[in-house]
Amino acid sequence: MSSKVDDDQAAYPKVRADVIEAATRVFSRQGYHAASMAEVAGELGIRKASLYHHVRKKEDLLFAIHDKMIDELIAGTMEISSSSRSPEEKLRGVIHVTMGFIARNSDGVTVFLAERQMVAGQRWQAIVVKRDLYEKMVTQIVADGIEAGKFVQMPPAIAARALLGMVNWGYTWFHGDGALSADEVADIFTAIALQGLEAR
Amino acid sequence: MSSKVDDDQAAYPKVRADVIEAATRVFSRQGYHAASMAEVAGELGIRKASLYHHVRKKEDLLFAIHDKMIDELIAGTMEISSSSRSPEEKLRGVIHVTMGFIARNSDGVTVFLAERQMVAGQRWQAIVVKRDLYEKMVTQIVADGIEAGKFVQMPPAIAARALLGMVNWGYTWFHGDGALSADEVADIFTAIALQGLEAR
Image 1: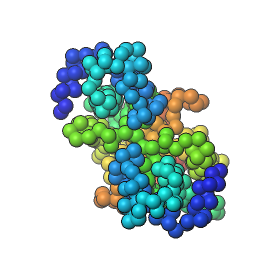
Image 2 (image 1 turned 45 degrees about the vertical axis):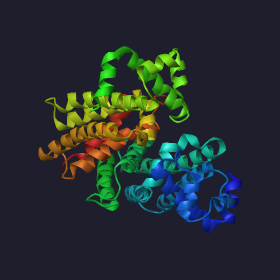
Image 3 (image 1 turned 135 degrees about the vertical axis):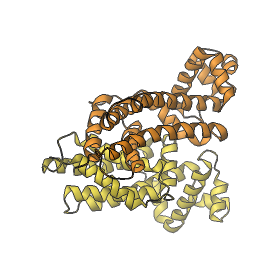
Image 4 (image 1 turned 90 degrees about the vertical axis):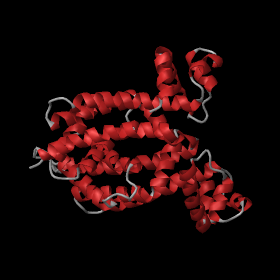
């Protein structure tokens, strides 16, 4: 999809992960627009010229942040959806994986949602393809549960979006500093979701 | 809270509503940073100098957009929460009001979530106070349902956030161009939520 970026990642795998993490922190702290490449370099403790050795422009960092986040979420979801678990157990797993993802990446999610209109063209298409894959996996779990007679009849894509919203909205309020851990919140969400979808 | 803005709104109620609507469209189309006051004036079909008669800077528009949106949501929610309906009927009402709000204001919600770090200081505090009021009303409905033995025992604030997320996340995918109307989606979400919270 975006072979230049993939080539860069292959050429500098270790450094690029550091760069992405530093950029995520800087963008989240100051906003994408206000942040400069110099500040990202400063966060890494390297010179700006060295940063430009790995990244040509700020937009590259924005894309790399999105791409890394989504890959991580997809990998976790795919492991669950391709397992032999029941639809109920798969839903439980997906809610826990996504809530954990939100808890670990709330900075990255904030940047993603705040700035996604800045990632243009082919790169945006690559992200949409991956996001759709994630949503389709969740929708398929709901559809399987309906077909197995475990979940109540309803449009699976809408039910999936209810579940995704429940969990994804956590980026606006869950910062890991409350009384409950990500897993405890995920347990409550799972209880609501499984009872809410259950066929009677 | 922000009496200067309130004074402006009282002085130019008609024009300000137009300005807010035009600014919402322009910001949503081009992004807040890329949009100019000249473009907002152009959208209104007035001169930039005339626009400055009503608004001193772009940040004023951002605040006015947030404030109008939240006032609308609060008014609808308050009408429901202060009624004599059962907790179940109140939840149904709140889900419908919020989903309708999302459907009508997806542009405004996009701007709000994308740019909220730009609304600073006292104005941000004013928005947080209103947002907390909205969330508290929803949490209270859940708490009342638990106390009445209708809803299952769980932390009401977490259950409320599950419901708010389900509906609010609609801003990312519900644009009124799919097979289902906002009310039809709200019916499905209500069915999941009420069954999901029901005490057995």
